[in-house]
Length: 118
Image (tube, rainbow, N blue to C red; front, side, top):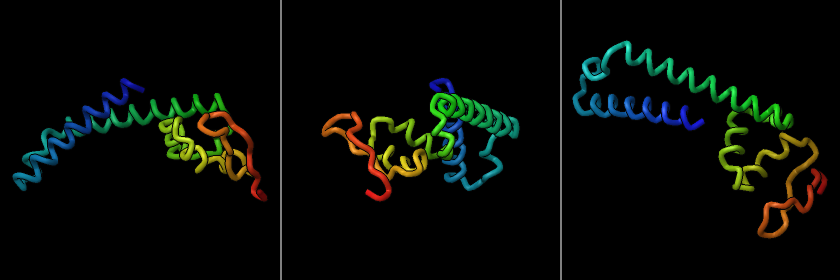
């Protein structure tokens, strides 16, 4: 996803540049640039979205329990893989009767799963 991140950074930088220029001069139409550039930005963002959805589908194929999560929740888990709290927040959606995971102290090893009844 590095290539997509670079593309997004480029579109984001251009968008912020246009918005800053517009805020300074108050002439919106004059500072927005060409219509073609905005169409190109839209196309690049659509391409990034498509690649992101493809990546998430691959992850769901690797671990089918991820199908129970929304794209936003799955992105949070994947982006914060080292943050056990991010995983805890979504564990119940992956495993219906599990309320939380207990980890061996100061490690990433699972000690036990706690049911909804405790």
